[in-house]
Length: 261
Image (cartoon, rainbow, N blue to C red; front, side, top):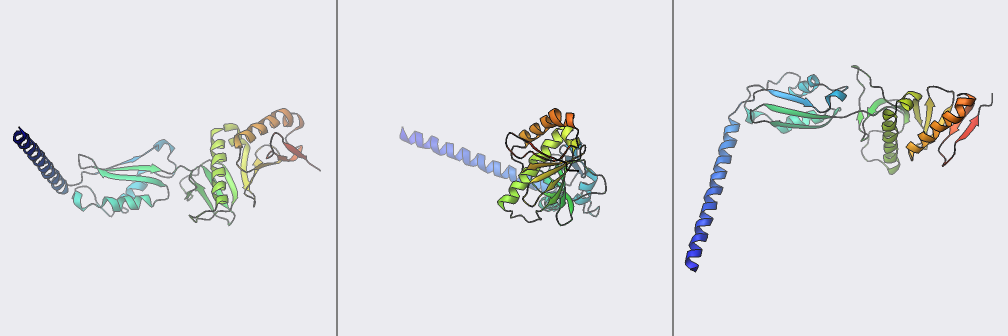
């Protein structure tokens, strides 16, 4: 009985070995077949294309083809350096991520995830640029400009190793920017936001000759709600120019500093 079991076990193992060997052979054959195929062209996809501002398929195509110096169609698949192409595309400041691969029809697929700007920044050193939600800088473009919250006095340079205070400021900029972009009233009312040396915000309104001392980005939604109620209940009656400064950074109150002249 035990001999029969051993024979069955040996047969079973042999079958799996043969099956595994066959799989490896087929895999090698498939790879060799792929290596002898030629590229049937390429297709570029930009995710959330409706939000694209400064990136389009033509700009990606220039990087893909090294400014039209490389012809990909009918080029042997094995001679195309996918990792090199992907690395070149990822260096573009408006590209957040890229995925390059061949589909089953030997067409080169280029999938792009773009960076979405959330704020226009003016640095304390005089530079101007956009940032996305991760704090990554993106250059301005002569193609068009985006209507975004504007921050001045941005003190953070391009270094990667940031201090805790700098990381908090970036989070505060992100939170306030995204809130303004989601609220048509405040997006229209806040003309610009100045960053003080203490890394707090002073907002300049579009309507009204006053400065809004906002503090940092802590409880930003509560602060805007409190400010809206002050506009509605107080400034609607007294006029938008009665106060020189509105201090809303304190809990449960707004301090209005009246104009002296």
